[in-house]
Length: 149
Image (cartoon, rainbow, N blue to C red; front, side, top):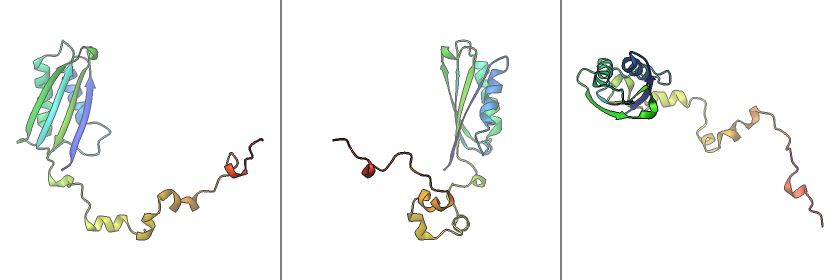
């Protein structure tokens, strides 16, 4: 089934909660982690990373997934992060509302409406070449170029 991955990063007093929320609400994702039944998350921070912060992040993430979800976490100390804390979340096992990523027959018909089946064998840049004016070549064709003797 589908899998979801996101990264959040924060610093400051509530950095664990803020990083977890940033990962959960990434603007790059078009789906939500809600309903996920399997979650793997990693907390990465410097030497000042505490177990309390890991627990805070886990509570935020656990509140966003299925109550019966299998949650596994890891911790990595990385001095190059300085005061930052980074959380990576990978989630899977979504409910049926997100679909399995396989289009239905009706979806395929809707997507292919107006497309001739034999035209799919022609690359799209050739199929759509009539939409764009042809440009004149910048350099002459190699057969028109004469080499000095």
